[in-house]
Length: 61
Image (cartoon, rainbow, N blue to C red; front, side, top):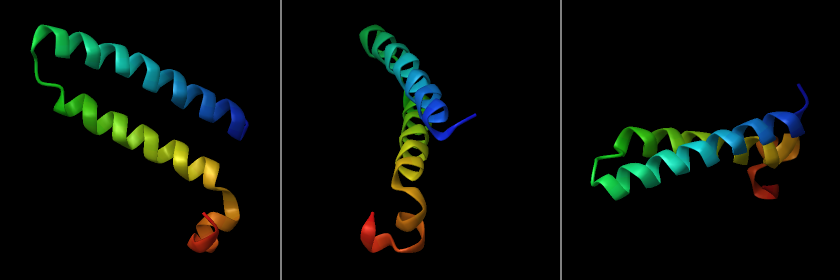
């Protein structure tokens, strides 16, 4: 799987998770677990988009 495909899969998961969170908000339910998963997925996307130089030299990120 290429980096572009991996990012697309992560974005699709975030989109589905957002719909799930919206449903919970409308029902007045807690969504802390989903919030953590959302944050983790965003972190993975940021890490993938940062690239090699961003990981070696955080100044370039």
